Every structure is written in C-alpha cells, then in structure tokens.
Image 1 (tube, one colour):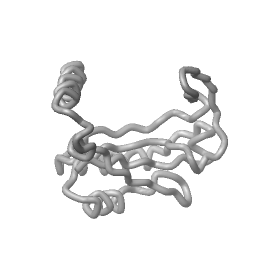
Image 2: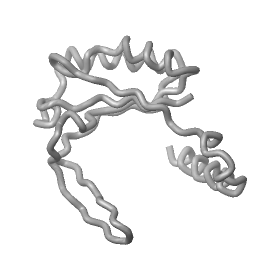
Image 3: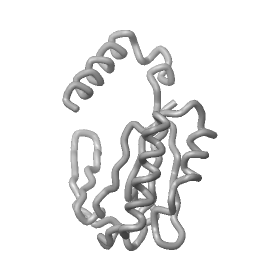
Length: 141
C-alpha cells in the first residue's frame, strides 16, 4: 500500500521562512530511517504558494491563478510518498517524524489508489498503458 504523507503549510512556510539547521538535520535523519527501512519512495519540501499557480477547469475552459493562495491551513508545504503494509504502519512512521513546523503542525495521511481499486473500469488495455507510462517515467530517473 502506498501513502502520500502531506505536511500542512503554516504562516512561516508560506512567508518563505526556511527550516533551521536543526530541523534539516532531524528531517535528514528521519528520511534516512525511511530509506533504510525500504519504505521511502519520494519526499520533498515545497516552495511557498506565492511561487505557484492553480489551474481551474470548467468544461473546456482553463483559468490560471497565480499564488499566493489564502487559507494557509489548506496548503501543502511538503510530502513523502511511502510504501508500507497498512495505514496503521503509515501512522506509526508519521508519529516518528520530527515536528515539521515551529509550534503546532499537522500531517495528513492519504492512501494512493492502486490499479485494483478501480475495478472493471480499469480495463486490461488501460492497465497496459499505465505500466508503459510508469516504465517510461522510471527510465528517466
């Protein structure tokens, strides 16, 4: 099972305040633990929303809005993608994470869809296409 671990933004991360050397050290150690355990697939911090954009879809129309975005509590400051045996195991890994922000912070855990989750709508042809795309992406790393 794969899980996306989402670190929620706060006013400091949105203001572009960079993590302290101590937090970078602690996160580095945590990332090493994840990697040594063989569960880490990816993990990165994200720039403030002021450097981002959103694309709104309405039928065939696309509207682009540049950041920054309001509602800091709804924004993501970083992520990990991990592969573990259960949601409980994902929770245990997140509980070991250093606090990613000064003061209070929140990390959200979301399971990633797997091919079998889509049922018969995910036809053998679509599964083949998915496998080709993943192979192409992996080859570029």
